[in-house]
Length: 351
Image (cartoon, rainbow, N blue to C red; front, top):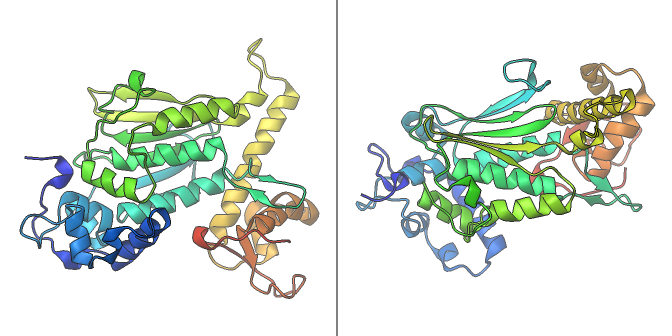
């Protein structure tokens, strides 16, 4: 019978494949292995090579639809296939949902992964570091753990489960809620090896560098989090309810000592300040999907102090390459606006 993601999906054809997804795969694969033989294949041959076409050579498999399908095809055959990224300004589910910073993502897995990581990056730019030369140091253990959690969420999900996946960004933690319990016992995560619910999807993720073939991704993430001084992840594996939740606590929690169980006013203010900055940065990048003036951004954020806004939000985003000016040759132009830079086009610059 084979795996669930190897099942053929009736009423599908190669025309249901999104050409942009194929191009994205080829570009990502080329970065990992420039001379990979599959890069020379035609699109239909590429799909066959990854078993994304059924034996008749015309019909897509479940993995074919999910990885490379057009959004219309994914919605038609997997109506519950969605990833909700939810910002909750608190620590309890169901309260204080920020509608502006929350997104419902649809489409194939390649576009969904990229979009979700871009959104998460916007929340966790607070710890990104600029050295004395104002050069951005983007990667850190927490970002790597976010990538690993997101990859596992999409790679091991039960796509026949009528419930969308969710990434819940709370004040103190980020939860990755997965429809589909972990086939591998979390107690064994430090041991190599994987139990794959969707081996065809996993094969694509391996070849573009989004997952580790040895099944050591979580173990590596744990080790790097520990070395970087971050809290270790927690898991809730509900085999009866068929769900899995991966929990990453935010580093901001560490500014509140737990020796006495008390938090001082100064420390509370420090955490609150970091959370406010996190949301301001995320809101700015979301709002600047379209070009916006400095005044428009400040009105959105309900800020009055121009100098502080430029120092804490605008300047770091410009230097980091997350925002760019619409009139770069005239930084002080009264017509100046700012627009968010797509992930694949970011280049750190001097502000």
